[in-house]
Image 1 (spheres, rainbow, N blue to C red):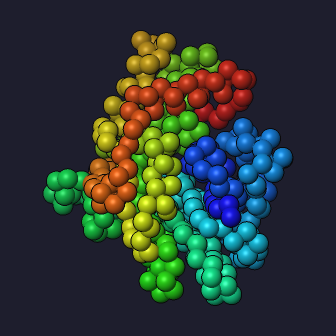
Image 2: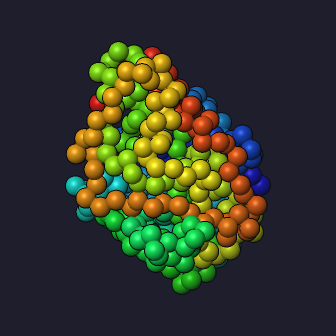
Length: 345
């Protein structure tokens, strides 16, 4: 019988790339949870398949509505659940902390409880569940306390934003449901991952968007930035979704938790310089610090130790940083050339 995968947040960057990966590399049917008002830009290439009911199905539900989640889980009984949906922007969480905590912590609890109830009603139902936390749970780690090989799974949590706090709750809920109810739930702390379809509220994507708008003559040759000294390790989103697939298919172990990330580490300022170096306007661009883009507290040493996940699954990142940045910039160039209008954020 054909397997079924349920992706919460299918309309996001990661969810849409995961759908692409599963359609290309498996014969599974893909069910995507989205809200009726969810933007469909990232899945526009899938809409014909959705209309034809060709292996892709949209399910309307909301993490803040328990009944909708129970209904979807009971009707589909997915073999695999990828829980990616969240309020995912750290800076927004400072101005909307309650929404962030409700969506990310209670929303995760509602989803896992819906699955738990379905398993109680049907003891033969044993799905494999991926709960996506975040590297932000580790927060602001002092240099003297950072392990030499990078942040490993046992580093203490020190969240530096309401978003990060919400992801601590998400992380712990995943492990709780595995330990309390014997559910095959695994949690990941993915470090910075990016590429085409990355939202323009994230630093490398807003850099790329601004550069593309400058090239098109839509804004002055000034790139507005926040903290350029923060250290980040980058992975390509397409490598990330391959990791998520391997997580649920390579000897999944209930209750396990993994750090996952790329192999290229640099300061945010170096990422900006790389993108500017690809621009036709590179000699004219000015970099301007915008105080509104600065976080009250920043998680600024995000360098992972991913040995646990790599040794368990054999996963390795394959797409180089330079290609990721080229693809991200070209993504924004294409959208802007199509005549779309954007906020200058």
